[in-house]
Each structure stands twice: as C-alpha cells, then as structure tokens.
Length: 156
Length: 265
Ligand SMILES: Cc1cc2nc3c(=O)[nH]c(=O)nc-3n(C[C@H](O)[C@H](O)[C@H](O)COP(=O)(O)OP(=O)(O)OC[C@H]3O[C@@H](n4cnc5c(N)ncnc54)[C@H](O)[C@@H]3O)c2cc1C
Ligand code: FES
Ligand code: FES
Image (cartoon, rainbow over all chains, first blue to last red):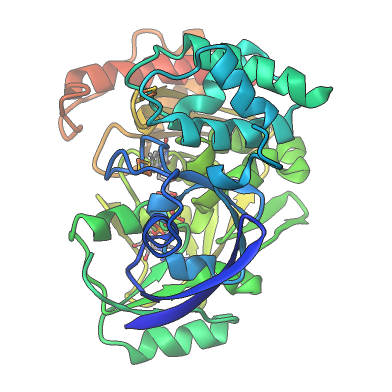
C-alpha cells in the first residue's frame, strides 16, 4: 500500500509517495535527500536518527513516514541559518564534541530539545538527557562540554 | 518490515470499526515496541490502526481520590504533568525513568500496559496503585489484567482507553535498570493506601505481580527494616545474561527497601 505524505521539512513544504512501511528516516534520506540524519542501529537505541517532529525530539527510525503526515519536521540540515552554523553546532566544533561525526546530528537535535526544556542544563542533566544517544568515539566528555557551551551561547 | 494497510481513525468508534473489519489488525500507539518488532519481522499485522489522533484517549482527569490517565498519554507527558506530579509523584518519577527522552516522547501508557512486557515499569504502578484498566467495552481490575509474559486480559481488537489509578497516602518506585535500555531488571513500587499496603514487582518474573509477604510485613510497620530477614522465592523468576533468578530475588528486597525509604522521606 502506498500513501501520499506531505510534511513541512526544515520550513519547506514537501511531499512524496511512499509505502506505508517506509520509516520517517528513510523518507527524509531517500526521498528528500537529507542524509544528515543517520541510522546507527535497528533496536531504537542509538539516537543517530533523532529529528524534531512538531518541536519534539523523536527517533525517526521508529516512526513511520505516514505518521508524520502534516507535521513540521526539523533535521540537522535545517538548524543552521544564513550559511552560519547554529551556536550548538559551533560549540560541537569548538569543543571537539565529535570524532567520526556519525552520532553528531542526533546529539545536536537531542541537545536542542534539552535546551528548550532548560536553557541552563548542568552536567548531570546533560548526561541523563543523552541516555538515548550513543557515541562510539568520544567517551561523551566533550559532547557534554559542547552542549554546556552551546546552551550558554544560545542564552546570549 | 512486511507490508500492511495503514489507518488513522479520528474517533474510538471509527477505530473499533476498522479493527473489527480487518483480518489481522494491530493497534499502534507510540510504536516504540511494535515498530521495532515489525522491523525484525517478528510481527506481521495486515493492518495498523494508529490511535494518535483519537482525542478520547488523551487527557488526565481527577475524580475524588482517583487519577484517570488516557491511554495515548505519552510517558513524557505523565512525567512532566503538574497534576500527576502533585497527586502521585511516584508515578511521575516512574515515567521519567523509562528509556530515554525520545522513547518518552513517543511511548504511551496504554501501549506499555497493553504490552505486559515482563521488564516494563508501568505494570508495577498498575498493581501497586490498585488501578482499573478501562477499555472500549469494560473495566478490568488490576489484579485480573496481567495474565502472563506479553499476555493480558485484553481480547483481540479490544482497545485500552484509560487507566484509573488510586492516589496513595505515600508511594515510591525503585528500579535496578538495565544499563543499556533502562528496562527494569527489577522494579518495585510500594504504596501505602488508607486501608492497605501494596508492593508490586516488575522485571523479576514472567509478568508483574504483587508480593503479599512484603505487603504484610509493611502493613505492620512501614519501614525498610520490616523487610529484614524475609526471603523471596526465585522459582519462576527470569534468568538471562543481565541477571540470574537468584540475583533478581535478591534485588526485589533491595529495591523494596529503597522504595519504602524513598516513600518515607
Ligand atoms: C530504547 C527503548 C528503551 C525502552 N525502555 C523502557 C523502560 O525503561 N521501561 C519501560 O517500561 N519501557 C521501555 N521501553 C518501552 C516503551 O516504554 C514503549 O513505549 C512501550 O512498551 C510500548 O508503548 P507504545 O505506546 O510505544 O506501544 P506500541 O509499540 O505502539 O504498542 C505495543 C503493543 O500494545 C498494543 N497497544 C498499544 N496501545 C494499545 C491500546 N490503547 N489498546 C490495546 N492495545 C494497545 C499494540 O498493538 C502493541 O501490541 C523502551 C523502548 C525502547 C525502544
Ligand atoms: S537508528 Fe538507532 S535509534 Fe534510530
Ligand atoms: S563521534 Fe563517532 S560515534 Fe560519536
């Protein structure tokens, strides 16, 4: 069964014919070419696929494309503006919050929701919030630092 | 994932009609359990009925000493809701401890309770808070609801609509989480009601259950020390790479003590 799915993707109205079994991450990557959102597992645990749907962070590997009908989806590609990195992206660059970078888009999308809940999160809160984001490279230390700095920059 | 037909009913009535008309339809709520199972081809529904747009399944209502929570309320909404936090803080804490933020943003109370995963958190609250499970056709008391591993009293196509929790005098939930998923290796909720103490255990056995022995000890004296010297039988407990049955039996008492201490604090 195929369905017609329309979403607002990073502020732009787009639509595609997809199968009902198409995952949101597959539609975003394969139909709309936004390959910044990654797939790192098949158990809904790694968080490489985190995007925002109507302002809330979700794992796009565990949501059907058809379930996103008429929603606003924000991926990592929609975070920077006017060719300038978002302060959270800049903080990851500045504080070496990444090595291979595979987990980074999910980390940043997750961090952005944390900052929405609490503009000044402490280390413990950041670490707890990252429960659903796995990184095989960094050991998290610099990711936590980057999010702390990114949140601070966003308050300015 | 195998192919399926997708439905998005806007009312309970419409959902019932679709469920009745399809050969092997499944409800999808938050999808955090069902979609991974479908990806692994462990589930093959002919039709998926998405409850996300059924307004009747949402909301949190207070009636006397009861708190009724709609089946489609997400874990994050229960963890962050003012009403739940002020009336049954233990339930908000339990919801806050589920999985991770993204799981909590999608997963629902109804999906978790209907699934009866032996390691899920909510079943402990359902039993400890004398809940009533409401469906589109009847009310089911907590004691009759969880019938086995991934098995409940729900009939095929029966829709869980809300869970009515009883507000306790005091309660707390303590769990030993699996470090990777946060599912309960063992989780214990203790609740002191006006007329009884309840101790409910999840993670240890094939389904969540009450521990009458601990309830009796705590009814005499609601303190961690009341549990000293008690023995939990590990006979039909789960044993896996995370914990042996004996270790789980040990954890039941440790978590129960912690929960009593937290409820008393
Ligand atoms: C990485 C990860 C970590 C997790 N950690 C935890 C944890 O720490 N603790 C915990 O308790 N859980 C955990 N979960 C499970 C999570 O809480 C799920 O959200 C929950 O078990 C199922 O809820 P759902 O709304 O996603 O249901 P779905 O996956 O949509 O459905 C689950 C089952 O229930 C049925 N169903 C759903 N709603 C209804 C209804 N209203 N009436 C009748 N049947 C219905 C469906 O048909 C399906 O069979 C975790 C999941 C993941 C992916
Ligand atoms: S790809 Fe791993 S959680 Fe989505
Ligand atoms: S930087 Fe490589 S997985 Fe995180």
